[in-house]
Image (cartoon, rainbow, N blue to C red; front, top):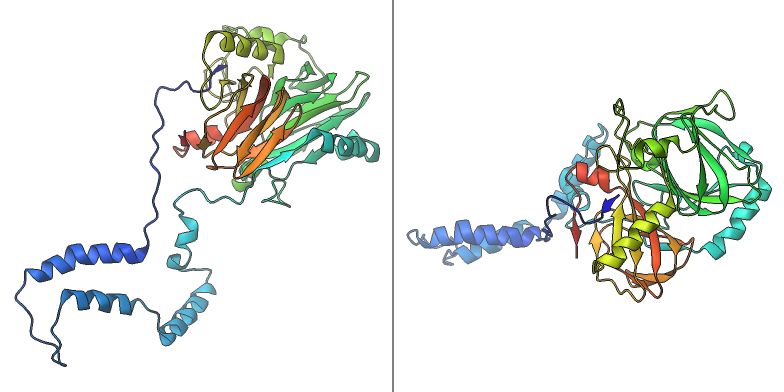
Length: 408
């Protein structure tokens, strides 16, 4: 992992300002017409003996902008005619397409564990993991109901696997992450290697890799799923294939993946075939130790405290090409400064408690609670006691497209 704020180039903040077309027109007319006319010989009076002036000329421009009934009817007829050929006039929709600042329907929201846990248990009584293929309660943003999305580009859900159950093997083009919220002892198998998971662990399922889950323990396991489903759907690149067997055969010793890539080293013969990290299991105990060491030796950032970014240990880049993942520690009594960025961010509390103040709302969070902060909406994080937060967003995609920006 690397410090969240590490960068070779500081992002620039250049807010856009909306200027109405009328103001632009007047400025242009004054600059290019009014001043020019003043330098010309005085023109002859108009037919009604009124003197001609640049001011009256500007007024005529304004008057011409007032839509006459006949013109409005002609335009509607024109729009209807070209609409039959699947054409629409840009000037009728431009203001909604290119806005001064992000205009997202996404809203801030908090899913309290104490409320959703009974529903998760009820789902476990109603349907098996095998029947459901993945027994998940989808966390839908209140501004995106019916779209199975927590943000415009990301999906999130809470998955339950009970003792003795298996979630059958499949693979899909969507990349997925698992962040463990409850339990210990269940496993994820990814392309032939099995890892046993605990609370706070971050696990990657790379695009188009077979994976299955099982729970040989005697307690239920719940984790937060995060996928790039809406983004892949937008690009019409979604594929899915079920495995030939319920569980895949594992042929690596558990911990082999961590031994190869989890110690700032890699096998000499390793050659990357994908942009996703070859390390797919990031144990919480290592991450927590790193955050604790940072907190003892450095002052917290005024906005996010102590924050680390999960990375690909071979390239130093993002651990996943479409989803950025982070872990941060807020010191006891922390009162963060206002922050905003273009990537909508999903948070899951691991330890401690505090609040997020956003859009006139206060989201009080504790362990296992999940909340979302929409794009470009300023928010502040606060902690009454030392708190640890996991988060994910679509920042890697935005940065790759030179779209991402932040302000604080």
